[in-house]
Length: 250
Image 1 (cartoon, rainbow, N blue to C red):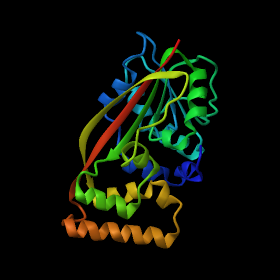
Image 2 (cartoon, rainbow, N blue to C red):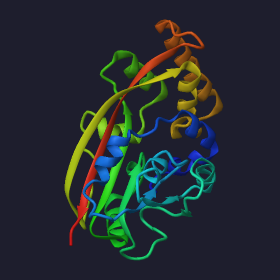
Image 3 (cartoon, rainbow, N blue to C red):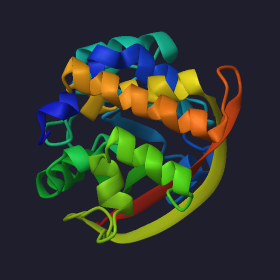
Image 4 (tube, helix red, strand yellow):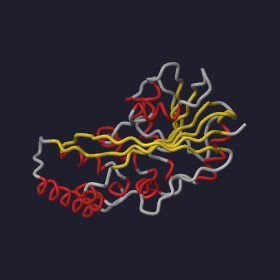
């Protein structure tokens, strides 16, 4: 991991689990659809509280292991996705044998890794012909109020990598090739309280001084007041799910 913020999430594991969006099943299925028939051993790296893990675990014949550098996040994952084996590790140093999985996936995590080192290490544990899948849920900032929300909360490394004005998408290196891209647009109804908890789960706020955190939440409340969103009302927060898949060459 390349940033101290990358290992800050355990302090807000409950908020992360409660407020971060789930991944659309269609997007996860697309990432893994090129696997050879019957090959369904998948490692979820940077698994966090299990947002992506649970989607894979629900697929027929899937066998999934979860890996994360933060033991606090893995503790929450064991509550939310019981029975899935968990291991402390990173994309650059995986606790897995050579050629032991058919796919490695990372949800909301590739922007924290060294792409060359991570590609090489993942290539070590993925069988020839297997898949590297990357996925992000990114707020759709084509709407003005969503752009304002991001300015208040501050943009994240994920948003800059996947959806920034100069973004070329994630860098994926050897031994992976044939990178394909897909996206899904959808809406997530959220209350003010849920959006506040989502903000609390972001690395910028987790590591910010208390006064800055308070100022950010005050700015969010001002925005919701302008939008006329009352405490128990919901507002549709638009998301775009960006997914990438690459094949490990033989």
